[in-house]
Amino acid sequence: MTPPSIFTKIINREVPADILFENERIIVIKDIKADAPIHYLGITKHPYLNLDDLLTSSNQEKELLWELFTTLASLADQAGIKESGYRIITNNGPDARQVVPHLHIHLLGGEPLNIQDHPQA
Ligand code: 5GP
Image 1 (tube, rainbow, N blue to C red):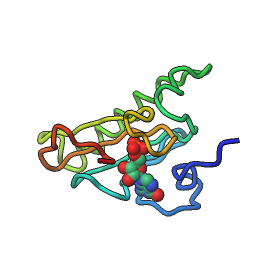
Image 2: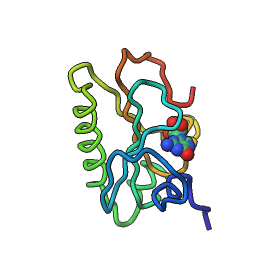
Image 3: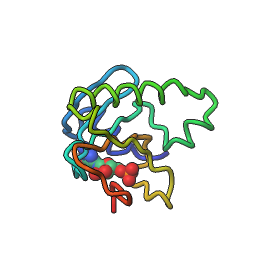
């Protein structure tokens, strides 16, 4: 069995985090190693390994993606970066340098972002 990811530990309050939003399906936290003034992570509570895992799963909770995107966009607005702009990305697999094997979407903004920026680079 796969051990619980760091994000599952955060969801279960076994590891602390700055939590910005939470409901029964998703949680949004501040990234511990921010690569921009605003760097949030929108995470599914169900431990999908990544986007591909969700899209190929039998129950295909695709509405979770909508919920993650709309929640992050709303938090971007609250953070005052709606007009200045922001980036939403997900790293899927080794070539994308996905580090945490638990589906999450990065929200980055608050300054002009580098075209080659990668949250782990
Ligand atoms: P990825 O898997 O898409 O490459 O990125 C994982 C992200 O999770 C990284 O940006 C990293 O800084 C963040 N991260 C890893 N461990 C923790 C943690 O314990 N707490 C928080 N808040 N973020 C974390």
